[in-house]
Length: 433
Image 1 (cartoon, rainbow, N blue to C red):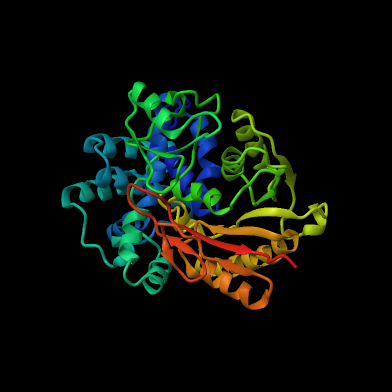
Image 2 (cartoon, one colour):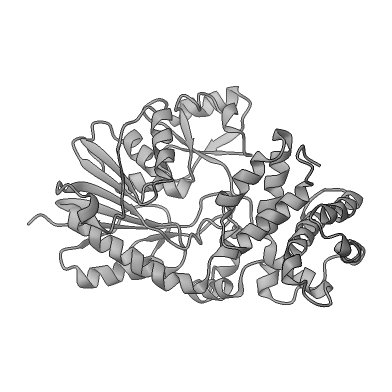
């Protein structure tokens, strides 16, 4: 029971209810964390993330144990039982505590008439163990449409992708090359008792053996390192940055790639960080200030160039487009609950539209790097293929890199357990006239 009198399981059930109503974990979890004591926050986060990660598997079991679905006004209790099932199946929590405290949480949710049902369902679940799983959607804990799309697009890899999505993502750092070499910072981590190793592909990346609070990382507050997945770090290695260039980071929030651009090349004439969300741009500024970096921030829809462009072309553009985020599900397991198959076609339209707009502001001789954190070809190499068909002055560059799958129009990284996220990159150049 936390200081506000609400059991953690009840708060977790409310978070899940908010996700079912369309909010993301990043929207609804922070206010919930603010309502509990500091020492309870890790447990609440683990309950919410874990239940989302295994939602489809837990939900299949719960539905099998209920004689009929709960009424809509009682839906919160459905989520409460999912949280309890998550603890029974995937945590070390004592069984008696899960059962007793979940029944108590049901009362605090003003559903005392359902305590008998909750008690009976959970006692049967504890006594009988996990039942046979009805299908692959439950077995791999993914929505059916997503599983089938992955099976179709990646016939040899779909199971590995699903397994990677269900694994805990590692904590990866990007060393600020303006401050430290990677080897020096690895030594500082070792001196602080933090086990870590160099990433395989990203030149400034470090992967921690286990996650650590950022305040334990040497000189984090002073801008020594940032938290960023290895696959995301690779964007700057494709940009061919050089002093004097004007650079645009389109769709920039929360600013990790903007900062990486500035760290990886001194003497750039200007870096413009553009994002449509006024709410997210302050986070970009916070990251810049912590790292002692300077960029020009603009709030606008990148596709509406008349709204924001000053007619000065950019030598380099990083276009990290809005996407299904199916390559980062292990970091954002609520994607399984929020994303719909019907989202993909509209996203593809937005992606192509952004690419067309960015091409207009790219200087002759300039380079554009197209990026997504998706594993769906519909958002990746098919977008580039469509663009190349209609844009006669676009030249495809094949990067000579040791990572990813060659998709003809770019490189596809699939999420790898204990390694990088899933990402797609394509490199385009506009020839000199």
